[in-house]
Image (tube, rainbow over all chains, first blue to last red; front, side, top):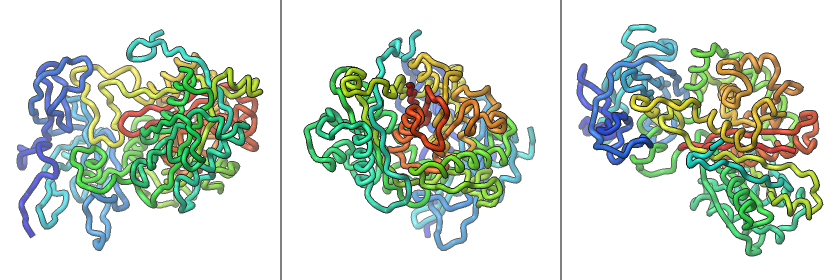
Length: 148
Length: 406
């Protein structure tokens, strides 16, 4: 099995450890921020359109809401049907500077009992799944230990 | 007042609902065409209109069965027997039915057709809705499954948890929505689930997406619904002196920045450069309908809302203006939205009792309004019903709300 670490989507995040960041784009004309990134047009209807430049998003934000998947999601979510299903959390996080809410998986091991709306979390690198082609990487939200 | 984004005043005439018909919801295991044709024949019989007298047929497409519903309008027309009617087909996810009604209304008001048959039907697969096969990294619906495993119930779970944190809704409140809707569904011969449910049964069902349990979340179903719509002139000539009338059809899109995380998105719009609009998308869907109809929430006799989850029904109370923000659970606890209440919601039993048959569902909501406004809703009847609203929202930014009056 190859262990090439490959982002599950190109250009949505970069960096390791404390340097890890989600990547969006910002319109040079109106300063609107987009995640997932818009590279071809600014979606602000009041903007005539400017250059869209890559911008790292705030690393930390606060939980807008959260849930979990008690059942195995269908394809194209990758999971081994022969392995017992382990629920994981999904966390929607509000980034104050960008005034945007971004959904992501919680880090493995975190359960809904560990979470609360308003709790601070940070984006960290994570692994979505491994297959014959690659180790597919993603972003995870991890509680910082700071509560609202 | 300017209503549309282009300043259009939204003033329209009314169209008559001559007939409504459904094929019962269930998991029948047959093709959607059969359900759609059964519903169409029922609506035509209800209207007292022969199929050959229909000038136009509008189909709400299913995404199942290849070529979206084999391109639905023509498929239903062929099954009913080609008779040369004008045809249109629409797809707008859960809002497909409202778009089909909107298309039919536009044709009637433009004088392109006197009588239009609107049909939607689906044959749903088992389990979670999921995207079509194939690798499509530019498709937001594909991405949310591939990258996050974010099923529809996961989004419902997010909304429910948010309501608990912000408004203090409880699991018991959510369960009581199911209890209410199941009791109404038990009285509806077209519902799939016709059994009353207790709060204990909701609490004992398995958690699917915390905090929501299996009985908080609507199933996916087979079913078909149809309407026969006509001009008011035709209705009078046809002898329908006092028909149910459609007064508004809202099919609006969101306004930027949309700051509520919606299916199938991975993030909201950013509000960093533009202040969010005064109303969320869901509220704006209803507002557009109210303004077009020239009525307000205080005029309603009943509402049919998209209870994809129990918590989402509560959200609609606020988005429809039935109560203030955060007051939905109180409205429910007071019994205002139950039978005999000030504003009964989901008298049909809702999606809780039907399960979702996507392209048929928004049409089925209008069928329920029609029967209620005619006083033909049997044991579910809201006494003296005069004005009803439907509300739902389709993936990718499709508003859906219809106001009918009598």
